[in-house]
Length: 152
Image 1: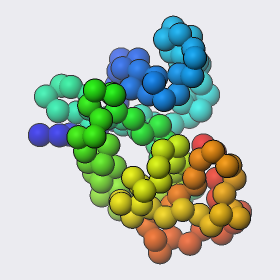
Image 2: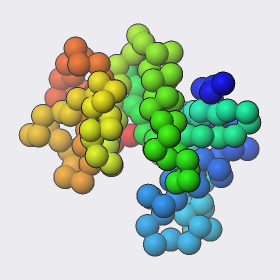
Image 3: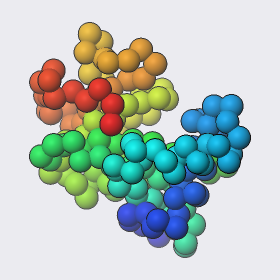
Image 4: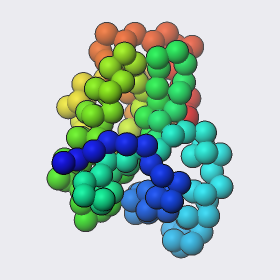
C-alpha cells in the first residue's frame, strides 16, 4: 500500500537525486547534492514522500505561505519510476489530507499534468516568469494579485 508521510532527514539525498536529471543542469552529482544541502529554499520547506514497502516513489516539498495556503514544490519521481502515477497519487493524497487549504505551485513541466488534478494557471499577465507556470488549486480559490507568490 502506498503511504504518504513526512520525509526523514536520512532520506534527503535520495529525494534530491530524484530531481537530478531535471534540476542538476550540467553539475556533477556531488556539486548538485551540495547545492541542495545548502539551499535555504529547501531548508524552509517540509519534504514529503510517497513510499511503498520501504521504497521511496515520489517526493515534494511544502511551504507554509499564509493561513491555509500552501506552496507545493519540487515534485519529483526517480526517472525509472516515472509515468506510473506515483506523483499523481502523492499529490492527491496530500491535497486530500489538507483539504481545508489552497495551493500554489510553479509548473516546470507541461502544466496539463497539474490541470488534470484541478490546478489552474494564473492569468498570463500575472505570471511572474516566462519559463514556469504559476498555478493554483482549487478553482474557487481566487487569490488577489498581492497574494501571488513570486517563488517559494
